[in-house]
Each structure stands twice: as C-alpha cells, then as structure tokens.
Image (tube, rainbow, N blue to C red; front, side):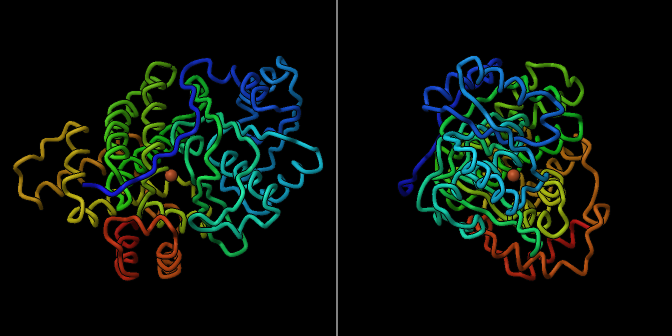
Length: 383
Ligand SMILES: [Fe+2]
C-alpha cells in the first residue's frame, strides 16, 4: 500500500474565454488595486491589455510591473514587492509564462513575510502565504499557474534557487488556450518540451503517488501526440488546447510529486549560462532517462505505452534503448537539435554545474540519487 500523499491544486478554469473572467475572480477575492505582473514580450502580444479591460469592467484598478528578465532575478522580485507595498496593492495577477508567474509568487511571499526572496530557498521554508494570486498562463509548459514551485535567479552567484512550498500555489489559474496562439515555433517547442519533461520526471519521482502517475501518463500522451501537430498547424486552437491540457496535467503531477535530475541540472545551467529552461531540459532529458531507466522501468513502460511504443516482452536493455531513442527523436522532431556545446556551455564548468545540481531540491526526488561523477558524466554526454 502506498504511503499517504497530499495533492494540492488551485481553483482552475480551463477553456477558451477563461482570461475574460479575471475581473470577476479579482473582485471575488476582494481586490481594489491589483499588481499585474507580466513581461515585455507578453505585453507585445497584447494579453495583459485584455486582462486589464476585464479588471476595469469590474471596477478593479491596477498597476503594471513588467521589469522582468526571462530567468527572473531576485532583485526584480524585491523591486516588485516594493512596488506592491508603495502602491497599496491587495491582490496579484500574473500574466505570461514562467518568468512573470514565478516572479509574482516571489513578490507575494516577500510582501507578507518581510524577508529577502533568496531566504526562502528549499522545501517548506515559507511561513506566511502571499496575498491572493491569480495566474493567467500564456505558454503551454511551465505550469507555474498550478504548481507549488517558484524558480528565482541569483544572478550574482550564477545560480537558480527553487522555492517549493504550498504557500506559493496560486489561488486561481485561468487557463485559456487561445493565449498560446501568439507563441512562435521556438517558444512552442521549448515550453511544450518543458511540459513533457515535467511528465517524465513526475512519473518516476520517488515522491509520486497513483494520482500524480495518472496525470503524468496522460500528460505524456497528450504532448507526445499533439505537440508536433501544433508546430505544423500553429493556428489550430483545438490542437493548442490539447497541448495546454497536457501541460496542465503535467503541472498537476510535478507540483505534487516534484521533479528530478533533468530539472536540477537544468536549473544549474540556467543560473550559470542564463539558458532558456525548456531548451536546457530538452538537451538533457534523454540522457537522464537512460541513466534512470533501471530504477523506474515499470513507470517508464507505462509512459511508453501512452506514447504508442511496444516495449512489452522485450529484454530490459533493448526496451531502454527503444524508449530513450523515442524521447531523443521526439525532441528532434519538434526542432530541438542543439547540444550543450552549441549553446556555448564551457566543459570546464561541468564540476561547478554538477555541484549546484546536486544541491537543487529537485534532485532529491530523482529515482536514483546520482554521485557528482555520475552527474558530470550525464552533462558530458549532452555536449
Ligand atoms: Fe520545468
């Protein structure tokens, strides 16, 4: 019998038009003045402006905070928290991908706890939840809108920190697939692969449960099947909805089961080289799956079946090769062919990267706890 496991989820509205409900939800949460957290790219796409109209229709004021880097930095969180304070805001609405949503989570807990955001690093290190938070994702991948994770960059130490706490689970996720229509092919592929990796890591996590396994397997099926199709037909809202649903299910799985070596190693790369999260995940995923195979065969077999692969009855080594090859081919099919070398990563940094990866909280739930030498070897395979 499995040991008892919690499963935490925000209130979720999923479907075309969900974004239009921002005003009603803000008002229900008692909002008078919102801090709307977004970034310059999302502003260009026009989604925050739509949210602002929905807020205004319900008589809710807003302040926009958009000075956020693609890998949001601790200083940006602190500036946002100061802004929240001086403008007397009472609710936070995040519109965008992982960067604004993670930054918004940081702003929330800094404003209620009165501490620096870097002090919350690790698992369950936050005392007080932030103010009410509504997340409106505009990518299909990060799932920060449903997760108990916030990833913040410590730019000066070239590290990313993971804050994992129920206090950063948003109150409401308004998930509107039409917002993903403005993503270009590269962003669609990278964020979609991030979601696929969430499914693959949550599935084999040592903190998984039947409930997280269920969502992880369905997420893998949806993303493996529909992400290449979306790249062929980027204006197909039906297909965009399937990938967004896959991303949501992957988010429900990883928020509650946590992640593994791909994310730990990817955070390390993102902190040192400012690499895009989905790209570094994609470069590492097949190498990590190959390393983990022996410890998680049953669960990888479930994922393989969801992906339409026939592994039953094959010797374990042959099954491993087929599965790893399918994952590697999938990332190439969605256009991700680069290696760490192509991304300007310096092999000299591998020991530094491995050290940080080993200390990342995501590593704790990898099905095998690797040694520093094993982590270095996985990085080297990805050059
Ligand atoms: Fe991720």
